[in-house]
Amino acid sequence: MIDIFIQKLKITEPELIKEIRECSTITTHKKGDFIIKENEYIKVLKIVLEGKVRVYQANEDREILIYYLNSMETCTLSLSACFEDCKSNVNAIVEEDCTILNIPVRFVKDWNFKYKSWNNFTTNIFRESYMHLINQYSNLAFQPLKDRLYDYLISKAENSIVKKSHQQLAKELGTTREVISRLLKNLEKENKVVLGQKEIIIS
Image (cartoon, rainbow, N blue to C red):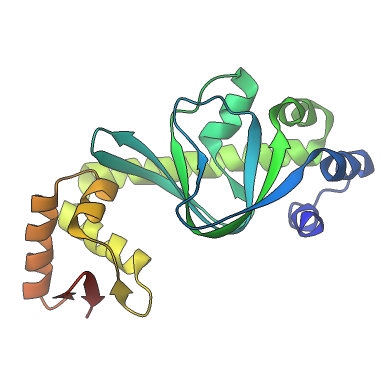
């Protein structure tokens, strides 16, 4: 798995390849496992090799989705914490069973100055995440919640079925269960979804 990471990032410096192999570890995580917790210091940079991770902020009983991490991606907010020695302001939870590459933060900063390919990797992560956050902000500011809910259901559907409660959807979209229930009924009237017992079917 480390070799795949090295190849996909087009890392060519022999010294960096050697350090990645010597200094990093690989761990596996099941759905529902936290790999980053809010208000904890970031001690290792976690890069998703396989699987999917949801990064969000929590406020009381609500959650605001920030982004998803897929293969060969890492959390920008955690990456920035590696340079500042500060606490995480997000949570990251496994959505699909994951294989994670763990790199101690002391190497992350050093590699950024020593190796061009690592600097390219971190720069690309910052740039792509910035664009994603801008898009997220635009959606929050300008897209109606009903449309965001429908798009979210499509993104979460497996074989056109979403197995999430109204309360779970409300937490993940940063609203209330009552609002979600009302919007789902509207979507059902528009023949876009069918509401079942503990599941939502995309029409």
